[in-house]
Length: 194
Image (cartoon, rainbow, N blue to C red; front, side, top):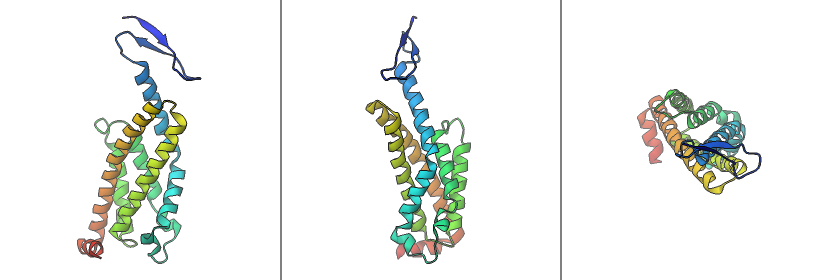
């Protein structure tokens, strides 16, 4: 087994030793480093995601139809949900550590219960749909700024988007179940029928 130093193809990148058997390939190591930096930048962008999300949901007819609902009311608990979701998306595999996902689910449940007095179930689901969209928009912005190679950028976005979908599906489901448990099944059925 021989080792050679292979420079990365873009300026400012470090060289990495690569073995002839392919272990620790440069492309894999570079992609892993890029994945970590995109994930980190996505978490750092959570205030922007939250601001964009709040603007988006505050202009939705579902939210404008709720009397006396302030922007602070709309944002209630969502910063915690977003932080927990991004931590679960960007942390280790769920098979290795379920704690970030469990925490995100618990935050989703709290959010669902808290919305029972203020909003219908369709409003809660619309919130999560808008959050998912804002996170994905920011994911693309971050990836475009940080990943030089377009093929790797698309793969990184796909990988993080798959994790994002898995995490947000769990959180959204937990929020909906908590809302139904807090409000009662009858209210959910009446809301969905109207």
